[in-house]
Image (tube, rainbow, N blue to C red; front, side, top):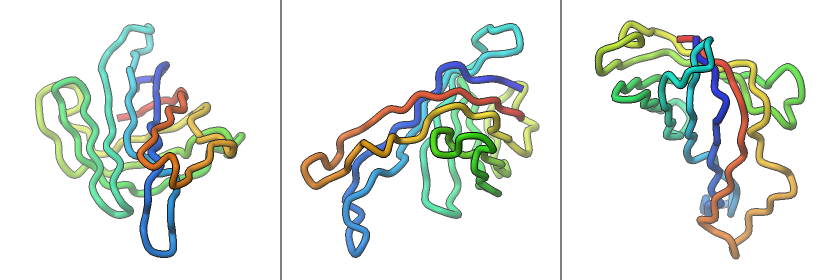
Amino acid sequence: MASSKSMVPIYTCKDQGGNTGVTWALTDVEAFLYDDHEKLSRFHFFNAAGAGKPRRWQVGEYLVTGVLITSLEAPEGSDKNINWLYVNVVYNHGQGALNKSTKISHICTCGGVLPASMLCTEANIDEQYKSPYEASYYF
């Protein structure tokens, strides 16, 4: 298990085209993961992918590719807390504690939701917004 004390989802105002128009999209996440003794254990980034497509996590020099199994609303304050995730690992690359991981749970989130007051319009296409939060990971 690792907990994140400094996680930042990055939302980007995008022109989705067609009937969707402009809207905020989760494009990346950066995090510093800490062990049970509050010691920095690894850096994590996530590259958002479309539904059903593999997603990548880089943990130090270690790369994990996974497919989202399910995304659940946070039990408390789902309007402010980013969803909990359960991921099936489909590819491991590198040596270390995570090289035998088959699943990743991302739970106990606090924060991270884009505020409703943040508007995405044609005037701010490609603008980014960072919304910090905390979470726990189980590998």
